[in-house]
Length: 342
Image (cartoon, rainbow, N blue to C red; front, top):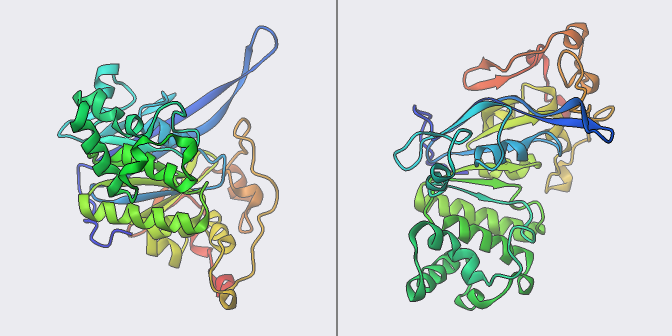
């Protein structure tokens, strides 16, 4: 985690407001629309300068959709994504192709799959150098020198410039993806499950590298993962998503010490701990994750919540500041206990 992160101030580097993304459900030979999948259902997030905001949740919670909309790769159904990089203020959801190309100089993305995010027919020299070619027209020896500097910066060797993706390990591929993201010295990097496909030992190397690069350059991260321990290591603040909505936002230490939403509490109970002597009893959530095509009434988490009462089944809680700097969308937030973790 960036210990020198500045206190939140306005204007934020990235500001996501009222974000929704519904995918149509179609049926029959005429592809008649019979419903929609609410992948993202009203998300508000802020990433400050020099900050790492962690976004965590189970598979299917909508994290990747938020990331792709924020990067300008997917159009939302509603909402805005204001990015204030490079001295400009733009809405990533309402840009022309030319405006998007300019915005991508200061906003880059590292994808989850290191195997699928690299062109198998392009050598690493061209893969890492492509942003420099497209944005600045760099070529020849100047391009090669800059690419080699980027590879060495992420812990690779100059000889890797001539390799193809199939010649590299998973960790090396992800370092190539990081080098490509760093090529234009962006102010914000969106890391979409950037370490989830890697072995634990390689994960730690990439995470430490990300922390080191942030200290050197002062960039910001929107860091997405499904493991709270990984997100906690990286993040200054953490946002927890469930079924397309943010249910809790807090500084990392506050969220770990006192979660105010039962879903966050369940994630903490079930997160592995490295010390066997400190192992705690796992809390298995009842039932299955509801379908985003037919979310339950009231609080979306109430069918699986051990604290749910009748009002939870009918009233949808809003994300509100329950304690200073600690936001939660729960009607019974003050009854959440950590006794089971001790």
